[in-house]
Image (cartoon, rainbow, N blue to C red; front, side, top):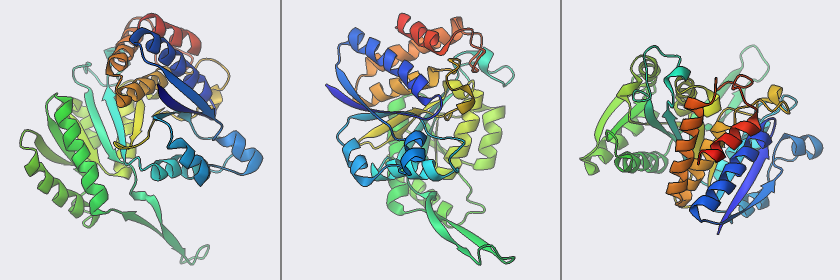
Length: 349
């Protein structure tokens, strides 16, 4: 019996989460596992009413669950950064979800904006450090509001944080059993403190994994190769900021935000899974948003808690629906409503 915490969040978040839960329910019946889920109202609506994001007691409560299923956080009436830092980053840091895992997989060549690229060309995973770097929130203003103002934002990297991220990436690359190639994505020629630490640690660890091929690419070159030769990549490991940027580009070459899912992973604790496309408030209540990213996130959740057969069945169903049923992955252009797409995934399990 698994316990799943559900945070529908903002905008279209609750709509896509409902479809993910629909598929979870169907897969539990088919594959013989049981779960309960409890919904939490963390998001913009509560914040606008009470000024509250999420407190320490609520975070401790989440530790009692096996996994968290998140819709999206973000609202046009809330200043950028409040919900993201007060809920998303706070949850990731408090639950020590130090890995952000982003599969980039093309399911149908029709959805790829790159010429002549097929599903065989775009199938890689980005392992992003999720608890340090620029997102640590360290820095200061000097002479704020004056003509000589200085804003300092610190990229805070520790040996412990870097090493555990890299070690996870090496282990993941071995288990993935594809090309067994791990690429370190950084900026060693300019960011000579943080990326000296990353490169040195990477070079030390790779001696422990002789069966894994390793290489390095600057982040700007990585974005170029995503477009020109995405087939070069198997697993990529990088820091928090670079990972945030390149995974959005990855989402585009795999077909868009409507199909992009990710996990915030604590290998020894509670992990959180979500579609990465945001709350898309302009589509709220129109029943046109694509739920496949949320459904894929639900599949990642199941894989993380050990229900790998159910997870694979969900992925296979999503592939079939995306490749044989939908006209597009874009909101309002799928040829089906949000709920109908969820029904199609259930039918094809």
